[in-house]
Amino acid sequence: MVWWAVGSRMRWWPLGLVLSGLLACSTPLEPARRESARPAPRPQAVAVAPAPVVAPPASAAQPAFTTPVAPQSSVPSAAAPAVAPGTAAPYGPAVAARFPDPLVNFRTPAFQPGRTSFTSNAEVQSLLRALVRDGRPGGSTVTLLSLGSSQSGVPLEALLFTRAADPQPAALVQSGRPTVLLIGQQHGDEPASSEAMLAIAQDLAHGRLEPLLERINVIVMPRANPDGASENRRVTASGIDVNRDHLLLKTPEAQALALLTRAYRPMVVLDAHEYTAVGRFLDKFGTLQRFDALVQYAMTANLPEFVTRASEEWFRRPLVAGWKAQGLSSEWYYTTSTDLADKKLSMGGVQPDTGRNVNGLKNAVSLLIETRGVGLGRLHFARRVHTHIVAANTVLQSTAERADDLTKLRAYVDNEVSSMACLGEAVIQAAATPSEYNLVMLDPQTGEDRTLSVAWDSALELRALKTRARPCGYWLSQSEANAVTRLRLLGVVVQQIDELGEMRGEIYRETARELGQRADVRGSIADSGGVLKLQVQTVPALLDVPAGSYYVPLDQSLANLAIAALEPDTQNGYVANRIIGSVDALARVMARPDVKMTAVP
Image 1: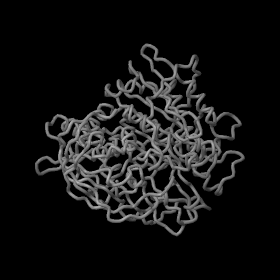
Image 2: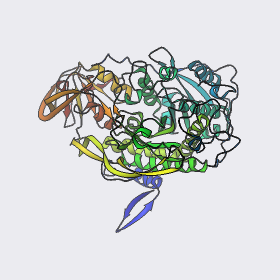
Image 3: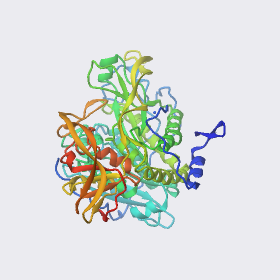
Image 4: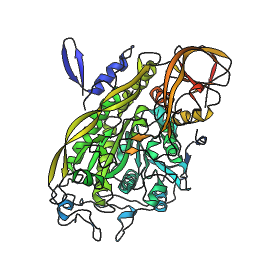
């Protein structure tokens, strides 16, 4: 729901109805600013990724089902022990009793009788292939998408589920039917996310979720970081955190996800993770994490306001209700730095580097779900997987129910973002808002709730730290083919200048620099090398643009993503991360250019 002004009164209108009215108007609504107060919230060149490879159907896919989800009681069940036999709990039985196993069964590899290990990479590959099938008349097609290989050579794969007659990416995008992308295990030490995605894939192929494919398409990538999974390690083989690499695209793992979103343009993305349940929280606060699930949607500078509203009204609220109906607790996502002297808690980061925020800047409803799992091994594993399954079920159901509204939302937001070129201001750097919060945690001895008043950085309302006039586009030197490759992989439109011309714009003048590290709310980001922390001034200039150089227009739907990559004085920009050689290799174009150009494929 949204407030909508009518005369001197304020009325409460459904967001879908508002969007229908806006799309009927010839003049776009004045852009809303995400940063205004709103409660609620040079490395090696990148190889051009190929189109997804379609694998042939398996000859005989074996049916596999999860037991239907039934409402759960928050009271521990004697029939389902809270702690798996042989698992050493990092806390006492009173705490463990707060997290009983659900009365459901799973048929994924890690839940086979007597199993004590997690599902292996080979088992993931085998399960995905067993689910592949051609669409029978009136039935569903399940297609294996090959997206390259991890750094150690493990296939990066996903399954596409659809009832569309033509499952090719362009046809699915043109159909207007929403596509949902479900991602598991970007961090290798978060296994419940992967196991849940495998169970969801089983139910989409043969189970109770298959009827939803009448309204939506679904892509499931259960294990986005197989190298990390095999080593039970957060980061990729190179030591880079893939979930901070979605703008820079240094890793093949991040490139694979970029390829998926460019090809299929999902309207909804769910990124499944696990969070640290004990560790530094116990050290800092003398308490344990209480909640089964933490949730947050995209919250970053220049995010379209209607995407935020849809994320809250159409998805987060049903998620919370769905968990509650299953006896599962939830809260906004939050974390804390690795510095034990720092007692502040922060909602998820507001930098345009995570999957959550980058997909938001691609105008998708982008959701992060985290279950309490890092550091617990197989403890409460069934409950953790169940929590993710409830979330995925809810998101898929909400998407199916809102399919028409989501299609309208995408059309409106794409047009709105494109129409903002050359107008107003863009936020170059934003930050969360310091506040206080009453957070419920657990006493490590008694298992009882303990409410703490904590310093809390809220991402629900962002502070604009640096703004600039929004340009019409950016000019890039002919030398910056590496940056162009990455922009194209993200889906950003880039044009190459065919002949010598002029553009009115602004150049950057560097006034200071120092070496530093990218950082997020947890501390320094696992990355390959530091960043250049630059200070710049913009200077009006008439640009001589040679043939072969590039122009990135902002009258496109991914304009806000281009801004995040190309402004040089932020920690995530391509200059700061040496993808673009220097500030002399790019400029802001402040008037629509009149030169001959050709789109870069």
